[in-house]
Image (cartoon, rainbow, N blue to C red; front, top):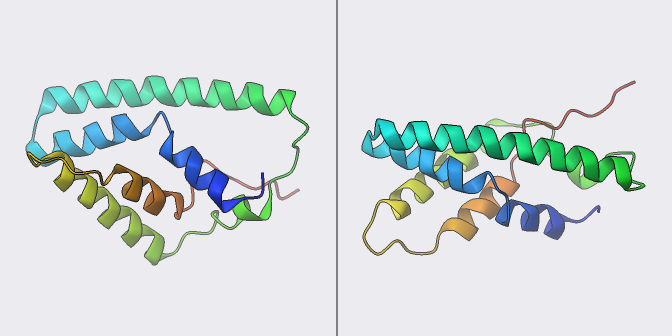
Length: 123
């Protein structure tokens, strides 16, 4: 799908969001146990995500990357800053008593940066 909304929606339901937030929180509060658990969950979620997406794209007729996805393959310093401050907002919100609901905002900000796993086929 060549849609920004689909890409952002995928980030909101991403199975990697929880482990990433846990890892950040664990680093922020220096909890080694939480960091280890988050890293293990991240590894499992990554493996499941790669297998699921591979099976999906073997079944569907999509064979070429669309412009919305390709637009996220050339990061700039602004993308790094968005990721850093979005992650910082998530860590701060997760570590407060009121918790808040910044997860969708962090996910949307993250959806605006290029995924490191996307490599366009150049030849």
